[in-house]
Image 1: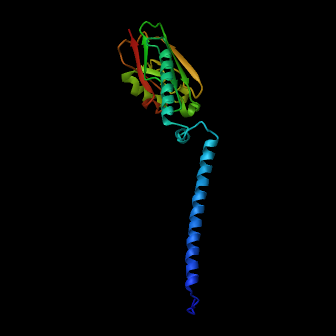
Image 2 (image 1 turned 30 degrees about the vertical axis):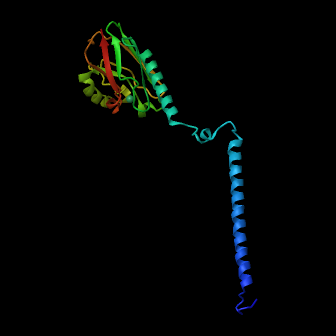
Image 3 (image 1 turned 45 degrees about the vertical axis):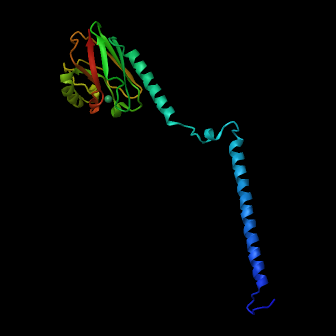
Length: 218
Ligand code: ZN
């Protein structure tokens, strides 16, 4: 072998090429082996605790929106059933709930013209104080509803936000806060079956949302 004088020889060059090729093959081989080892470990680990579950089960979310909707619907159904029971058409005993979200649970109440008197019980299912989220139940004709609701603000909390000595007010409970309950019993002698009456909460601003239709049925 001749030496070029520049440190280059064919023999060294061949050794370098062969050496590089072997190194690459070994590296690739190790990578393959290592990869398979990791794969094996992953599959062993993820199936170890729940060997009975297949891949679909394992990737399935624990919580599905569908189930939540079903729960919400079930709750609605229950509320409706309870409301029906309380608010049986024509019943002389009516129960209505108000909450912290400015909502009555009823949009309509129907009492029988045959009721000697009607008792409306209001339950505040929220937790907020009367000064902040007070509710009452006030009854007037549809025509008087807005004027009474407007006058109510001036009556103040001390008067339960009900105009004093105002014959447009057909019935009214006291005003209550979260967790409290109140009721009013009144005669419906002056009310006419078929006439339009409105019940509402007269706490300032609440009447816009907290209102419903009160009917006397024959
Ligand atoms: Zn209210």
